[in-house]
Length: 265
View 1 (cartoon, rainbow, N blue to C red):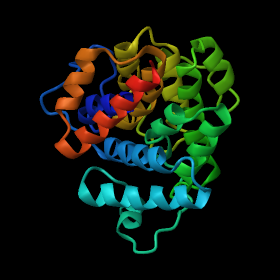
View 2: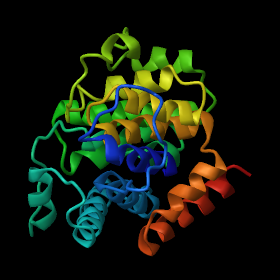
View 3: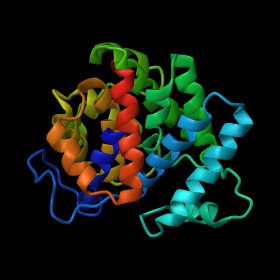
View 4: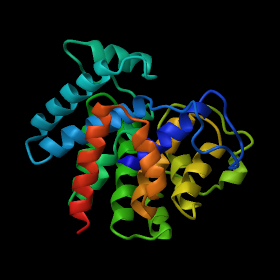
């Protein structure tokens, strides 16, 4: 989960000021957490507490927790339809295929005990809002990448598996000059996957994602949710990231770190 948060925070200052190079300041003084971090934490809390319950219970928990967190942090960059969903007294999915479905899905890949469970949790986490097939696909592909990476799959094996979802036959160098802002799953998730596939370490994955421009914070959050599983987050990056969260979100992250430390024993 911290991987997605790192990508979000580092990418936050480049979303509206794209930078087409890997040579950039990593933690700028003005970087900040956005809706990507808030919703990643919310989905983690809901899945952590309700993943073994019924599908209806999980959907209810996801909805309630996402609304709780979103209302606690207004003005963090939510899309228009999602803002209306956050404030609704009777929230319903609205057929979105936005990349928000993929940026918040970390917990599905990390907490799942099987690949099928990772896919199911991803479908649930997306479906309470982003129930368009492309929204679901973006979340499922990202969660599958996380699950495979944490299980020790090579980047080549991840490429093979995720090619079932998207055409990944391109390079970042080829798309960098012309890639533009895109908030859809189909226009963000394949690029985020290739940023992982071309990486040589966690920081390199962050730099890959941000270097192509576009929706930088979300693209980097998606890439880095998978890169956390593939490479782990260097302690100095994890510590700096945690320092940029407020006490409420820091507590969620601390609980995540405690769970992951136990899971890795």
